[in-house]
Every structure is written in structure tokens, then in C-alpha cells.
Length: 146
Image (tube, rainbow, N blue to C red):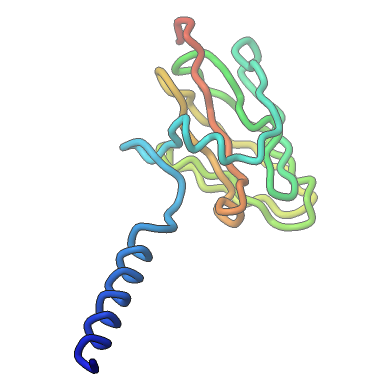
């Protein structure tokens, strides 16, 4: 009986370890470190905005969201992002694919330049609040780019 209990306990421990290894994780990403369409759904969504004719976008950073969450522009377009932290905490704007990692203190403003992809999306996020849904996506439109 004691041997049987030990086998059951060992199997239970193996199942727990296997389940722990499969769970958790971060956002899905493509090979370039960008967000896939599936992971954009996990963002705290505060809308999209067509910036294809503007070349810039004013982006609000607040408690756990970016607004707009999805700036949409021409494929390959360089975009000036005017960040304004309207929250009470420091936030960050990061785009892994482009080496962008910029902190913005509460009540402060900053400007960064990013390039929209040739197709699809590239993710951005706040490195301090990413796991809480403070993410977004730069979206290339289907029209011809620069």
C-alpha cells in the first residue's frame, strides 16, 4: 500500500510540474518581437486612428492604456509619436523591433519616431504595465507606402 501511495504522489507531482511548464507566458510575438494580431486583443483597447496623411500622432498614456491603441498608417511610413503621460505613474513606450525604449514621467511629454511595418503590425507597450494590458499596435494599411 505504501508503494502505491508513493507512485500516486510521484505521478501527481509530475502532472503539476507539466501543467506549470505549459501555463503562463507573455504576449504572442512574431519573429521580430512584434505583436501578432491575436495578442492585440489583449490590449486595453482605446481605439484606432488613421495617421496616414499626418505623419504624427498624439498618444495619451494613462493608467494602463494608450490612446489611440492602434495608429494606422501607410506601409513603411515614419511616424512621430507625441507621447503625453496623463497618468499618475511613470509609463514607457517600447517597440522592440526598432530599439525604442522611452520612459515618460507622470505629467510629462516626449516624442519618439517609429516606422510602420511594410505589412501587418508591430507591437508597442509600456514595459512597466505590459502584463496589465498596456499594449498597442502600429498597423500598416494595405495602400502603397513610402
